[in-house]
Image 1 (cartoon, rainbow, N blue to C red):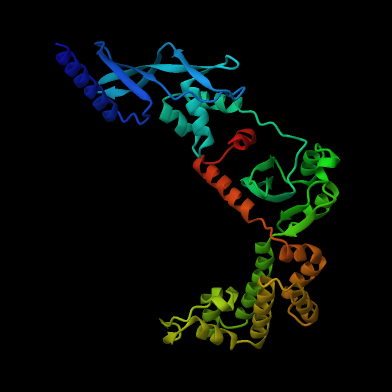
Image 2: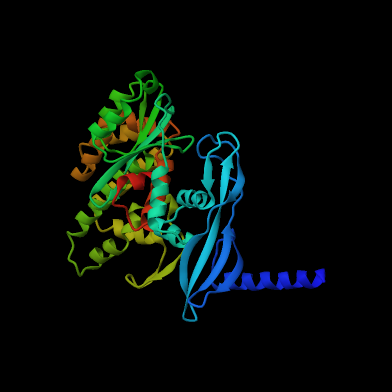
Length: 397
């Protein structure tokens, strides 16, 4: 007799599992226990249960307590019948402070930490977007005004079109120190002045891109910090100068000429590090012969003595910079600055004006690479959410 009851119960649970799979209820923590045909609609009963989490208030361990009164969740129509899920949600109670929490709230908090849009979370948990927003608004971030890292990275990112914001990050731990609604000097100064001078004096290094407005501000706020320019932006300045010179020389040729078309087609070879050029030979329709990249480059340089001279200078500067030969790097700049094209002169003057910061970039093992990775994550969050209108919500995400 007991065996028959066990088989019936097992068959019933298998049917309920089939219903769950059919309705594509993906949350494994939702267990459907009963089904009813009410005549006017179909009804499923179940409960939502999770492993007891940490207390959001005191960080102590919570324990399972009881289930809430069943919530009514309209789901969809099945065979012309409306379907209603009556879901009871697990409640937890903290062993330390006695605070109560509901399972679905813990799941919302977990999903908000992940890279998901609020509308997607609401759809996944079969709740309203307003419920997700209310949970988001409960998040509180407290800044410790008595600590700052010794090595800090500064950068900016686009909050929305035409609106730039400021971000600072701990270089070593990758912890975001602050995200500010704007990148003006007043906004940044007002934030960091909230730290005591003693704390600000502990900062030894600040990495940043070549945004000159930050230089003076960083010295005022952090008098003991060395400013390290990002390696990528220094190389980028040289690379852009080389590319602008190529365009200038290319425009001197007739647009139908092979010289113009070749300089336009193979622009990447001129910017590329000569030590990384491929030796593989391919058929090149423009030249009607098989050539390596090095052979194509030689043809491009043969079109202009000025292009060749600046290309060789560009490659030599790249070599000294990558090998950390700071003396040779700046000696070459000072030696050539009077005779180079005005495009290169502008870049050389910038390097000489910020010589101490460029030297720091070459001598110290720091850059903005880690912060750029964080900025890519921020862009990914914005893309997933199709943008944000409210900066506070964006900051919490």
